[in-house]
Image 1 (cartoon, rainbow, N blue to C red):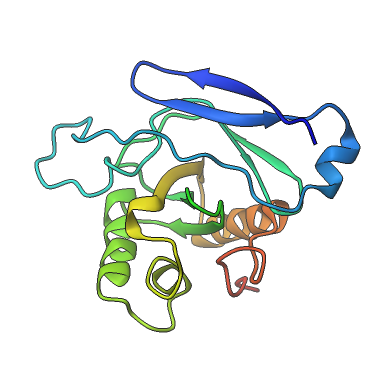
Image 2 (image 1 turned 60 degrees about the vertical axis):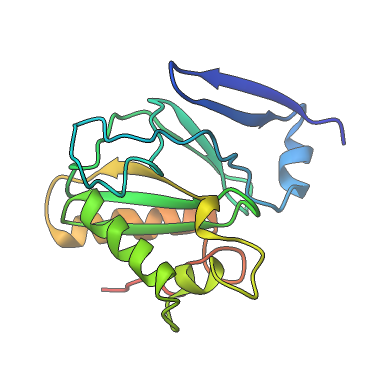
Amino acid sequence: MDLRCSVIRSARRRLVSPTYRSAGEVLVHTKSVAVRTQNIDKCVLGRSRCNTCPVVGKNTLINILGSNGNRFSVNQHFTCTSTNLVYILVCGRCNCLYVGETKRRLADRITEHLRSIKQNLQGYPVATHFNPPSPCSIKDLAVTAALTCRGSDRDRQTAENRLIMKLGTLSPHGLNIRMDLF
């Protein structure tokens, strides 16, 4: 299949996403497509010990293609201190996705994910994915906030569930192992 790519550029990062010629190419394409881009080494807000900014996407427009062929575009601006949101973890090596939600700062939640990976905590799908015997490592991790949710915890969890379904990130196609049902 001839896969043409569209490039979205910003001052510090570059994102490459596939451009399909027909709907058939999207329907038979079963692998998540999200390309890891160059990291930013410093926190955009000047926080000295920020672990999130080096792995968070800085583009204001990011396109993510789920394992089921559905596309999701991020067109909001987020920082490491954004709260009450749904976020997406992307493996830059195998393009596997994880959708999560947090009421707290994005930096706090991502720090927990990074800690679980470094400590290789069993029972955590993100930690399992980024540790041996998987070929993927913590260096392949990229993060983008997807949606800001105003309202209750339930509204945020509903938005997370919808995004999990839209992108098809439930195991074995992604890293989510369950959806919270109310």
